Image 1 (cartoon, rainbow, N blue to C red):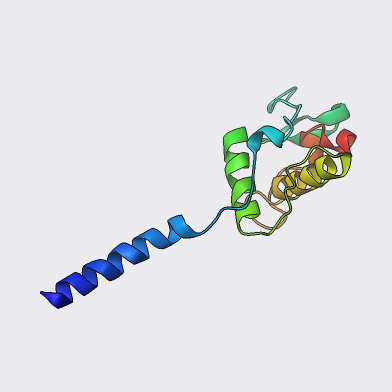
Image 2: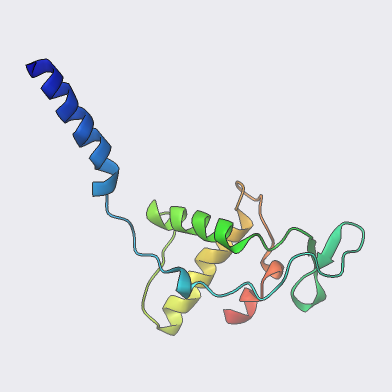
Length: 122
């Protein structure tokens, strides 16, 4: 009886641990829109990006997919995401977003910055 209670108690504590880990601050509303729609003007497998630069037609990615990845990078403290509205913080968030965008599916496996209008925000 006591062993069952102990095992059940350990399992309950273990299940609660992820919920006890605080999440890093992240507000998706502070991530600027991409400013580019994927699939525009397809020619020979590439599409039109910011300022007419050719980009992969699947760029930019789905916003929800991007935000999920961005949040996970912020949560693991890999990227800064300041929450204030200063010019410096806005630029930091854009730089962090560009890093996620360019490495969305692994190192160097993402979308170029020209799949957004974010370079103009720096």
